[in-house]
Amino acid sequence: MNESPDARFNLTRRTLLEAGTTLAAASLIDHPQAARAAGPGDAATPAETLTVGLRVNGRRHDLTLDPRTTLLDALREHLALTGTKKGCDQGQCGACTVLVNGQRINSCLTLAVMHAADEVTTIEGLVNGNHLHPMQTAFVHHDGLQCGYCTPGQICSAVGVVAEHRAGWASYATKDVATAPALTDAEIAERMSGNICRCSAYPNIVAAIREVAEEGRT
Image 1 (cartoon, rainbow, N blue to C red):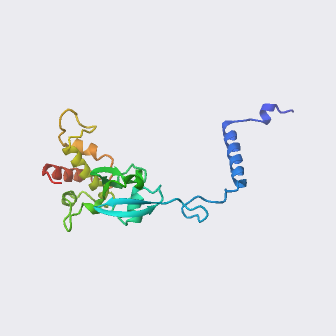
Image 2: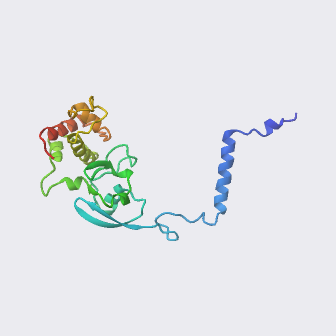
Image 3: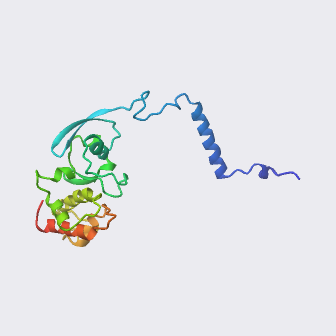
């Protein structure tokens, strides 16, 4: 029995992709530079570096960095400021939150070289001598932490939330954006929604933020 041409050569999207992948791999094997890695540790192709002046917690630091270094890695790996945590490393958990010029950002989503002219404040920089920041004190008072891993990011974000509220910034939960929003529990929850606590200490975190906001402490 003779096979039809269609039976002998059944081209599908899967077989086409497999064939393309095989050809691409074969071309790389024969490429003269295929065996040479482009990573930072490759002596044959050293990564380009540059000197970045970062002002962190009131002090200037001149760092020699790969330009692809995130602000998070610069803080942790080059300045040993390990209070800022690496959680998801994708901007989803908020554990790496720091303050840049008073505003909160996810330090894993930005490059260190972008902040040469900025003032960066980490959880270590909130302390005034031997005195905790009011937000740190409130977190302790209201038991706003359990395992503590997310706490530095939570506190930095909370400091940013209070500043945003005092500046009259609206949020998604604000009912009337034409007036200064009241810092309700719903407002705090919405504004802190980018910071995840796997221990679920959320009610205590809200209470801590409310205490600092209502007492007008900075």
